[in-house]
Length: 134
Image (tube, rainbow, N blue to C red; front, side, top):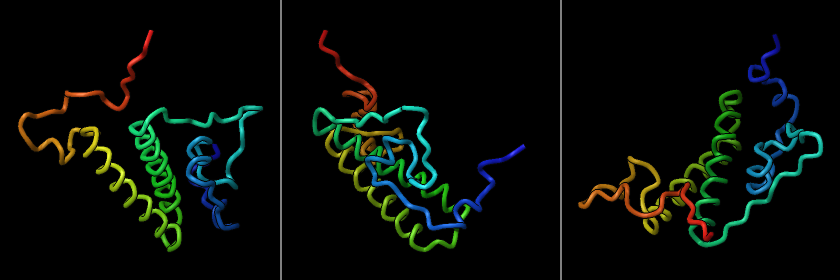
């Protein structure tokens, strides 16, 4: 049985080409030389309706790109340029998380913004909640 994840020769044959953050996130794949669209599917270009959603979308995009590069680095641990880009994305994730949590509250239960009284984990709108006007 062919194991796609163990075939790291696809990265050794040529230098991987990356999509920009928006396209990679929308396609679900940061590597343009590995992307193969499904039939006639066209990815949806997500748009934020306010500053809070924009910040959360930016954080999701950067986090996704960092995760994709982490998987690449599992197979190519000596690629210095990709490691530098991964570290940039990880730093940007921490920066965006800090900005979001300062403005809108904790994103997860181990946030540094949950260290005061009252413990406010359950207050406010959670990132996945949406208020619909019906």
